[in-house]
Amino acid sequence: MKNYGLLILFMMPLFAQAQKFNGGIIAGGVVSQIDGDTWVGYHKFGYLAGAFVSLKLSPRSSFQLEMEYIQKGSRLNADSVTNAGNTYIMRLHYLEIPLLYQFTFAKRVQAEIGPAADVLLGYYVESNGMETDVTVPYRTVTLSGIAGISCFITDHLKADFRFNYSLISINSGYVNGARKILFETGQYNNVLSLALIWYFKTRDY
Image 1 (cartoon, rainbow, N blue to C red):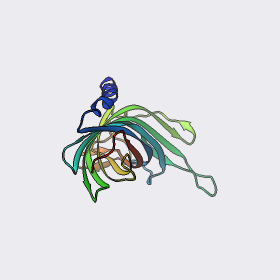
Image 2: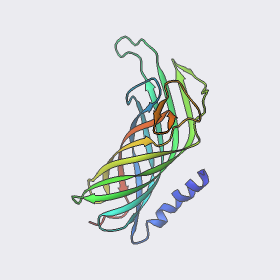
Image 3: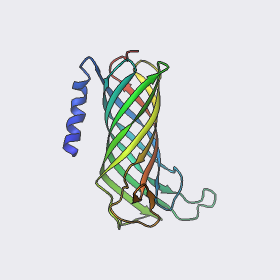
């Protein structure tokens, strides 16, 4: 799976040479939490970075295939005043491959939606400053859903805000505090991201 991902990444600039194709790079930050653990709130900060190729279907619509590294997870901080209390951090490192349908309105604003495959590259879990073993393994490949809105700042650059949520649980078994969504009980990535996206070619209006 990783080899196929690298192949797509290297081919993206080639796709972008075709008339209806464009390509570029993406970089930004994320805040995340895990629905189904015992902590609440978007306290875990992370990063995302990658590349994409887009195919123009009409003056207003397009498909965009992306490949990016993204950090997800969960965090519990000690009390900000007394510095007392438990601490916890879960870092999940993914290779994410979204396929998004994008619709442009008001010339510079785009709405987008689509699925994303998540390949787990590694993880780290720490409780009260000590690395903790994981008793229930994380799935190597999961699936997420993405919905977002973006605005072109220039003809090459746009700002993009997204909501990214697991469509299947990230665990392969039951964990304490797990949440039931649809037909499955487990933990789910819940992520908000803000990124800058640079297009190699000037955007057509």
